[in-house]
Amino acid sequence: MNLRVVRRAACAEDASMLAGAGLHPVLRRIYLGRGVRTADDLDMSLDRLLPVSTLESIAAAVDLLLEHRAGGRVLVIGDFDADGATSTALVVRALRAWGFAAVDFLVPNRFEFGYGLTPEIVRLASGRSPSLIITVDNGISSAAGVAEARTRAIDVLITDHHLPGTELPTANVIVNPNLTGSLFKSRALAGVGVAFYVMAALKRRLDQERLTPPGAPTAAEFLDLVALGTVADLVPLDANNRVLVAQGLKRIRAGRCAAGIRALLEIAGRPLEHLIAADLAFGVAPRLNAAGRLDDMTVGIQCLLADDIGAAAALAARLDELNHERRAIEARMQAEALAAVRRLRDPGPRALQRSGVCLFDESWHQGVVGLVASRVKDRIRRPVIAFAVAGDGQLRGSARSMPGIHIRDVLDNLDARHPQLIGKFGGHAMAAGLALERSRLDFFARAFDEEVAAWAARCGPGDAIETDGELTVAEIALETAHALRAGGPWGQAFPEPSFDGVFAIRSARIVGDKHLKMWLELPRTGRSFDAIAFNHVEDQSTFTLPEGSLQLVYRLDVNEFQGERRLQLLVDHVLPSP
Image (cartoon, rainbow, N blue to C red; front, side, top):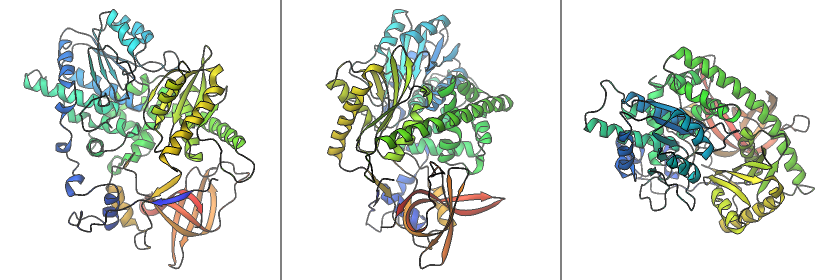
């Protein structure tokens, strides 16, 4: 275990801030630490959304859509993850409900076509004779695919949120808040958020021109899909995204959601009435993503499009089966990856000597390498790229990074320094994908390590565990847990509150092969607490149960058991006492 440092987040000192908001004292402190300063910052009403009209090119997108409403054939092409699936379902549902004559979708099989609007997927799509292709959650890096579509006289509307490359596709219209020069005040929209903005603008124009069919849904009625896709894609929960997620959660709790979301929540054992963002992140998103990782995201999109709860339940059951299969594959790959990382370490207690780590195994599954990269990154606290065989001498890699190291820019710098090394790449600050010739892997791994080391030297040590400080014995209470649960939505860049403290381990045991169950005592108080550290045990044969006094980083959770709600500490890190 690497020696880790706990760093407590700074908090505003002005006692008057949020003083009249009626907040639990701990929640108030948390908000202040996350930059919330006034009661208006806590307003999650739709009125707080950034105006639809301020997203560049959105009026031109509506003009293009209306050209294809009555006599055209619209084909939506999405990504094969949960953001892409929710984006696709949202646009298909909206256009069909709002009077578009012919609307269908096509999602690339990642193993046959790879990511985005490739020329191959355009040629496949042309068999359906579309007059307009709409990309959702992809397209900004698809110059060749868009060119192929235009040569076939197919119009293209790109809606995307990924960072653009040096060459923009020659689409009819591009809507992307991350285009260079964009003045839109949130670059954090997920793909489904961009799709929602375009559909909201379309609905407004339809209403203005009295073209909306009687009884048609409003744009807001699709916010359940927006919440799911936004949470699943781990985009920063800035003020705008928090409104989108909060409003979507509100609809789902009230039962006003797609049958597929209801079915997925039911099979995950997550009750609607107490739903929080974490239930979407850990209950629904993995099941939805499993389709794109192992099979074809078509089944996931069909689940989100289903109106009949019986049909949705059957599709959700298939997604659940795929998720069980994915978990088994991931467990094997993760064990192999962590064994490889252990072999990279110097003898003795010294930390891993590489700044950026590349991992590859012949047997690894393309659809699961991203999860493996994420898990290993969490363990070793360094950027990780996991690769799998993609055929024809190619590898596909999935990268995950740490705060302060923008992984897409790392790859961009590598591409500039070593032209032709990387086949293609794209992504965000924290996650990216790339193609690489297998014969260049060793050279790439060394170059990646050097580039990450340069980034780390500029941004300083990044291996600190950020917490919201220490809680008093009175604050470690069920009331506090309820207040924090209700204070969300929490997520990327607006993290769920976590705390640190020194506890005495009174008892500890392994449950479910890899979870650590503990009974803790807060010294000098006489108070004891139930706690669990999920996925803490890598190998039972070498694991030593903790004892004595240790520093724990934990979150407060409301544990429901046999109808009773109890406080439980969710332990994220077990560290030596300072």
